[in-house]
Every structure is written in C-alpha cells, then in structure tokens.
Length: 304
Image (cartoon, rainbow, N blue to C red; front, side, top):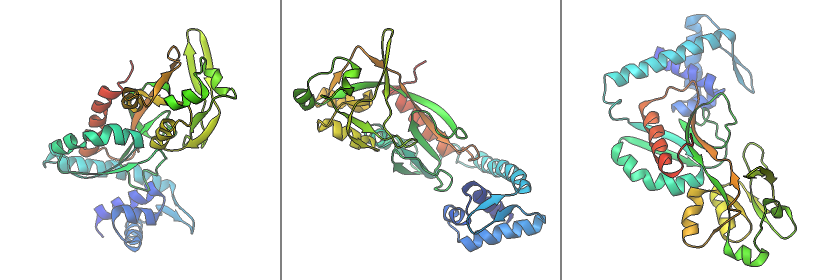
C-alpha cells in the first residue's frame, strides 16, 4: 500500500462523501480508491468510514484522523513547493467557477495578461450563476456576489458591485418613465427578474433617498437565472433592470441603456472568492485570488 495514495484517497472520500466522486477527482477507479481505504483501515485496525448503499459517513475515529491527514497533506505540498520552482512559478490545472457576466466582461478579456504571467497554469473556468459542489466537482475556488450561503467556506472580500436601475429606451417609449421605485409595482411597468440560486425567486431591491427607504419588487415579465440572459432581456426592452455598473457601463455609452431613479441609491453587492476550509490553498489558487482582487480594484473596488 502506498501510504500517501491511501491518505489522499481517504481525505477525498470524506470531503466528497462518495467513493465514486473521490475516484473521479483523483483519476482512479472506484475499486482502487475502495481498496486503498480498506488497506488503510486494516493497517490502523480502526473503522474510518461507515458505508451504506446510499452514502458514506465518517466515524468519530475517522473524523479525528481526517483532521490530521489534511494537515499532513498540506504540509507535504508546502514542503514540495519550498524546494521546487512551484512557489515562484505556479503550475497545474486550476478549476474555478465564476458568474457569467463577470467572466465575459472582466475576467476573460484580462486572461492574456494572466497567462503571460503564469504560463504553466491550465485554467478550467466554469461560467455560471448557480451553486457548485466544490468538493464533489473538485473546484478549487468560486467567485460569487451577494451574501455567502455556505458559512463554512473561507472567503475573501474582493470587491463591491455598485447597483443602479437601468432600462432600454424602447421600454420608456412604450411605458413612460417611473418617477419613484414603487411606481414599478404599478400596472404600467414591468421588470426583469433575476432568480437567485439560494431561493429560486427574484428578490426585492432596497432603495434609499435621504430618509426614505423602500423595497421595490416590480412586476416581472420574465425571470432568468443567468446574468448575461438578464442583461439581454433588459436590452430587448422587456423591463427595468438592477445592474452592477460594470455590466451597464458599455451599454449606457452606446445609448442601449439609460439610468433611472438616479437620486435613489442601493447598497453595494459584495463580491467574494471562496474555497473549502479543508482545501490546501496552493500557489496557483493564491495567485488567482490576487489577480481577481486586482481586477476588481479597477472595476468595483471594496468600499471601506
């Protein structure tokens, strides 16, 4: 039995809750992963995992052992990096998941500079606005806006998205200009809804003007769960939008969108880079986080 392979297999089964998922992320067969864990248990003479037909659960002994195994594997990675060029030149596959508008408008246009600086990093970028199984899908980190739904994640606050209200000129010609946020709830106006992953429903937006505070929901003519589709619906004149400045700016410049309710303000939406607490933060993850933070300092800096 290769002890390192066995420890790595055990840790990945605990993290993913599945021998099958662990095998996929380790690029091994399920049989091999099962045998490695069984050999480890035989060597230790301790039951580390409870196996049923539906799920795998770690035993109390296994949980205590897992905490030490994770630290050991992280120390081994650090030792390798300290005597190699990995610390100076991060390398390997990096799997991330980012919101679709941020990828299209900010991250992907800046990738040539990232790859020029880190040519040995193979970036696999999932582009979505939906939750991902970071452990099961072996994703190193995610970029997400809004309140984090998983408090167990380690997160770095990298930006604040300033939100404003926008609409296509064709909509104003048809429906007129709303003078107050609550006018959007009247019979003459329509909004485009964004389906938030944590609720599956559009959320009202809280807006302020001086001492006045309102929650505007509007009447959705359609609702989508993707940022690019949300913007496209607004550009088509389907309804009023709440957008981050970086998404709206190029379309305001061309006249495709115009701002509404400019004397009202919305709280900024925080943007985070998050990763599992048990996952060792490698050099390639660290440089990616710093790169995203640098880009957001230009496009949507953290508001102190």
